[in-house]
Length: 146
Length: 149
Image 1: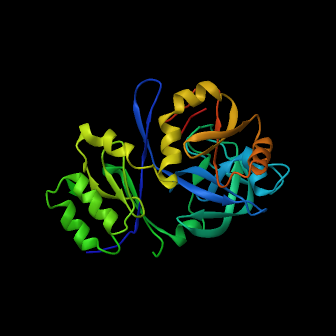
Image 2: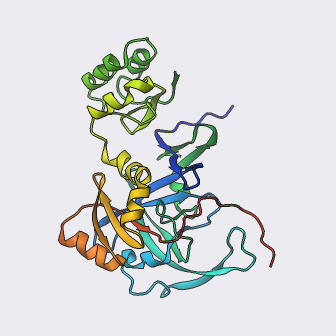
């Protein structure tokens, strides 16, 4: 039997939609440390299907950029989409549960949602944490020492 | 009552307290005596220390509101919870605008992000949660499916 220990628990967020349905979202709030050192908190959707953490394209001022499409372009496939779309690759410093990581982020045109500003994806970040996804109790367990 | 993770100093004692049948108020006092921060969710779960669930369904439904009133909501747990709980009102007021949220209130709003960041800087607001309130109806469901064209 494999036993793993997790020090932190992040609960899914409950949203009542306009149609009256309840939606549970696995959201993680990270601090994005801007080039000037100021922090902003960004809620992101926990997404193991996202290769890289992906932010809404119009968050580019948080990375100290003048344009969202000034970085390295690359084609990415999207869920449900037949054709790849273009994302732009940058570096950013994200902080989760007090642990700051410099990691690649993509800027991409994403559907607008008031409760999350992007996708919390795998590249580099997932190596720094351990995650256990517990849908039945709507919990995400996290360890800083995987 | 289902006990989840409890970690850190006094964990064994806390576990014993939660499962001992003592009234919730007594257990909360015990936690405070250990210097353990606690927070009761809208659902009545007890969150302690790193805002882990200490015990599910810890507070009887009829006593949740009373107990929550006595304890300030911690910033780490509150901002997104507050935003999601007030989404309807916020959408009505800040449609199509960027907002900065701190301490359970919208502390700045603007038509674009650079202006919002400038307002946040000028007001010396530290570490606000930033979001954009879209005008269009929100689509909540996502799916990993193939779409034919």
